[in-house]
Image 1: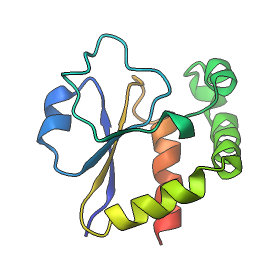
Image 2 (image 1 turned 45 degrees about the vertical axis):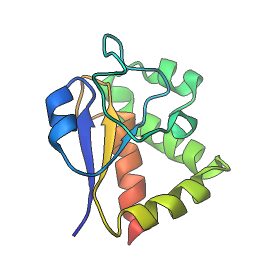
Image 3 (image 1 turned 90 degrees about the vertical axis):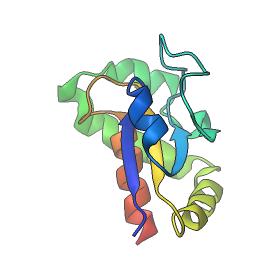
Image 4 (image 1 turned 30 degrees about the vertical axis):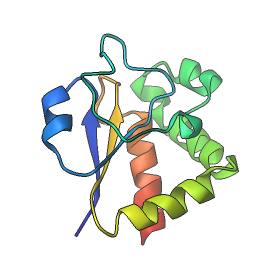
Length: 123
């Protein structure tokens, strides 16, 4: 059964060798990664956390619970969230969705929040 997966943008080979619909979910292009190195079908920066929220979070683990709540609120308020969800529901019928992100912390980042949101809405 297809699923939503997370892969760091810096793991070029892992991104390249995983089959699925690849979506970069950062608002900013990952530092030090050339566009030719990173295979992706969609750069979904419109659903990334706002610049204000991203700057406030600053990848500080203790801020993650509040970041997660605020980011989920931003996703729900975003007029693109429903069309994106509808589109991705069709994709996941046939193949994995791979969310590509640049954060160093693999446990506390926006891609984890987005994956959880997608998983809960795909049920």
